[in-house]
Length: 330
Ligand code: PMV
Image 1 (cartoon, rainbow, N blue to C red):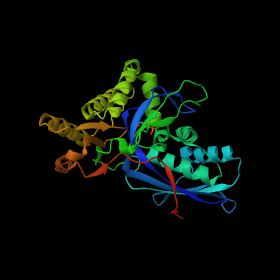
Image 2: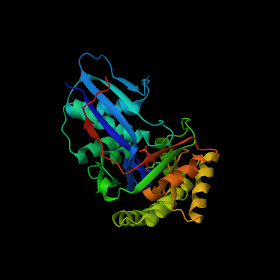
Image 3: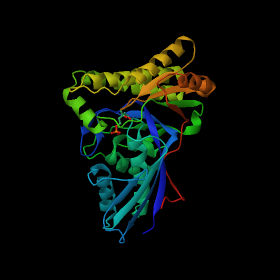
């Protein structure tokens, strides 16, 4: 069987996903909306062959331990779907720090899905790839698609209508920018899988999240279509703060922010007071992503890099969906 290689971008959610209604199939409690980030990508090569005696996975030059059930389970899922027995070799490289809240699981699982499905001889469309990627990591379903993307929560118990699709392609709003600030490269303590489960089970405000998230989705969808930056930025920032309020009021509390996170948040708010249009969003980690328009990207980057806590910034534009490429990693 031929080897196959795919690249996929990370995606940053404007309306977040935090909580499942089915843990095994990874079905979310609410729909979510994100942007594919062209500066944060993962490339993965996969090959199934009789010459391999067990599955080997190498991520950023490090061999994965056998207890990494998530990725191994995903390879097994693809093997079953294709009806093959051969073991796999997978090599994956990301151009940004993994497991620090920069959506590495999304780009990683999306690239793995596209590469391994192709290598296993499956021929799947975008919707099917999204449904498959979703079962590896929920947000990975969004990394299959281009530009601004909605992951529909779906209502079917089998998950057949819980998939992602583009709202608009990357060229619809090419001026939109997401500046990822790196404030720490340490591995986070609470993974999203365990964290969101704790929130659904123990957070007293989860009902309030579910009651208001439909409004956020409608506003952001409309804001993207009309390219209304202030509407999208302000709604996305408020949605992020609402999600972190859930995390903090989960038992035991989940606090992803470190002092440097808060420093960037204040700086973004101060920029707004000075008339610079910038908004922030934060995921399951300490990094802050700053939303702005192309016209302000240089000034905002300069100001962010002046902050004590900011180690570096990565500029992202609306990017592609996951795709096959010709250059293999082994
Ligand atoms: O798909 P996961 O398990 O990596 O969870 C993603 C959760 C957040 O990044 C916090 C929110 C989101 O919608 O991306």
